[in-house]
Amino acid sequence: MERIICLAIGYALGLFQTAYIYGKLKGIDIRQHGSGNAGTTNTLRVLGTKAGLIVFAGDVLKCIVAVMICTLLFEKAYPDMTYLLKMYAAAGAILGHNFPFYLNFKGGKGIAATAGLILSFHPNFLVVGVVMFFGAFLLTHYVSLGSLLVYAAFMTQIVVSGQLGLFGEMSQSLLLEMYAIALFLTAMAYYKHRENIVRLLKGEERKTYLFKKVKS
Image 1 (cartoon, rainbow, N blue to C red):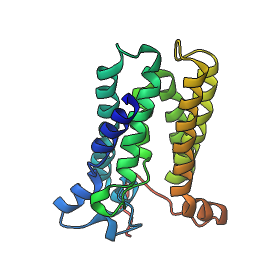
Image 2 (image 1 turned 90 degrees about the vertical axis):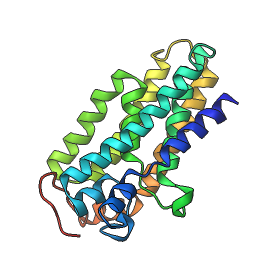
Image 3 (image 1 turned 180 degrees about the vertical axis):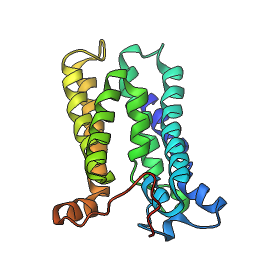
């Protein structure tokens, strides 16, 4: 039951579609401009750097809040499941962001929300995530490449960390359950980026610049 509660709390918070709401405040439906994606990168391209940063912060925050709420609710009762329940809460937030029911399940790609997962999951994950994303982005200006590398690193790191005992007294069965959720999120991110992957392979992916508003 605690798993379902965490997933539901995460999904409810994930429904706060920062890009869509911000776009509406500016008089547009962000899903009808640029790439059509209701996320940070498309907002940055269509509405500029300030808008992109606001949307990024909102999407990160909703995942962090979901994880914090679930941790406060269940940490004492289920100390051995703390990290697993964090993963369920974050998964719910990412699903809510990607597939909001009230927008016909057309949301974003979940990368900013995943940043919230990394920030709230374990301190050791932050450095690797930052290095992977900004290393790739600053060298290539491909947001999609940085995002995909972050997920690959996250999946690898969570398995290695779990097997090394970083998550405390979790049983192997709970660890495997957590790995399965992480694998699902990774697969979903790669699926959501399938068109980006094709363009990257063809050398046709669009570059993004933080301080240059690119016309859509």
